[in-house]
Image (cartoon, rainbow, N blue to C red; front, side, top):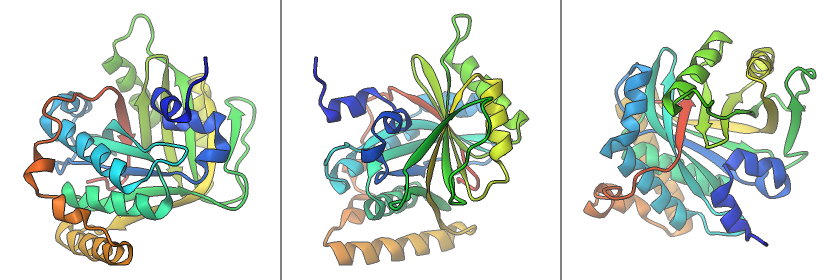
Length: 285
């Protein structure tokens, strides 16, 4: 039976989709954002926050804005539920995949502004050169030419004797054990995907050791990560407002006017998240 690309995108996690459709995915950016403003939540609290209205609302708003900002070409933008980690702490978060670079930056800034965040993180795959490279853990380290990359590690799914929370907790513990404190973990029915953004090759060994310990496969996507905002939350909001205003003037849109509307604030009341994503990101709130 033939499956349309749009349907395929809904059934396969974004990074796994890149494994099979690298030619389509290399132009699609990754957006990481969070509604959480608390610091260093224990893992169990962050995971429990997946069921909170704060999380459900943010996820619904992310999907709503992505549907309108990022037109469907070959890949439809998809918002994934997430739980973020900031060193020893954690937070509920969201990852969006399927927007082009400029649209992704605008979307990320809107979401960061909506959640009163210090930062929005957008990873933009490189347009020139190969989009991705795949290696098996334990088969040697093979890195892209460019210094910045998004690693995607595909691990076996939840074990028969495990709950989802136990599997996610174990993955986070293994990441910390191997010195990884930034990235995103997506839990699926038959796999766990770990996304890690690196600026250079200093963490390559840690990433491959982590993948080998978990019997995983490694995918690398060359590109550039953009961390937009400021350490001071008030200053961050001003930076985001300025960037959002500049984009809207240039493109004739005004989605920022919806950010504090009743329409957006009431979203997510009856649409629970289907996927659990654990995100490890530096300075994410």
